[in-house]
Length: 348
Image (tube, rainbow, N blue to C red; front, top):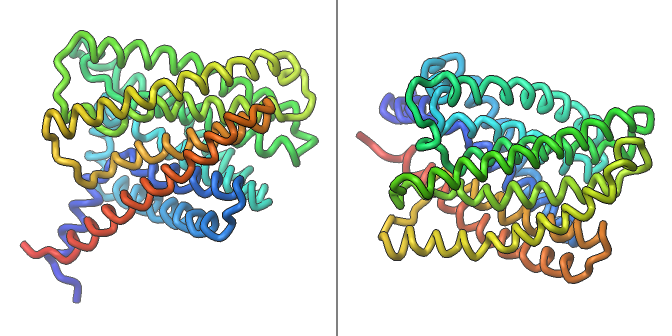
């Protein structure tokens, strides 16, 4: 018979499940893809398995939460600091789909793209209204944080999946080209808007170091996935939408990669300020996966951009940075595993 205390802990964990936990899927999947690109097939398959398993488990947990603790989920939709975390489902679905495409499982990639595209459209209208526009408190900019950039990541992940399928679905090439360019363009404008709002929040309001949490790294990850999506579009076959934008997207992808590179020292310095200067304890929290994903995405961005635009130095930087992402993933994964074991073993 199950221990009532342990069961209560599990239920409490499900009720308090953060909407952004699909960042675990995103981080595992993108690092797995990077390892595949540089030839470390076995390790890539291990992370691919973690990515798939985490996706299934998190889908089940969120379904449980929706059925049993719907009020808690609705509260998250109305909270500007948490609502944008739901976009990690879209990004995680497409990262898993892109990794499946690397294995040649294009049917799975197509199904996942269909699901993610529908959810992306739905959340793209629901979350800004429920979490921002419908609130009576003003100014809402005071509640903005790094999770707002996840909307950008979700948009660009749709472009990545569409470009992945374009190679094999010749009969749908023009439609996939339109979808890829459309979602890439939307993602670029969303990044500009999010960057302005989050910058205003930092400059106009007091920032508690505890609030300057790992999701702020998504500001770099959003640029990096914009580079990946752009590089994949540049590599797409001829189609009217691609031909009209190929040169523009190729040039902007290089600019975005440079900006992502510039952001890394800024974010590292912010981490030093938070943990070393302001003494915020460094321990495992689910939002750390929102930091690991940008590290992996920056590596993959360099690899893809270097190969697409024939920039060997950029590809070299990406392939070396990948091991920084692998090391960080292992540290956070161990922290997560220890936390789960301790939580399940604890007694009231």
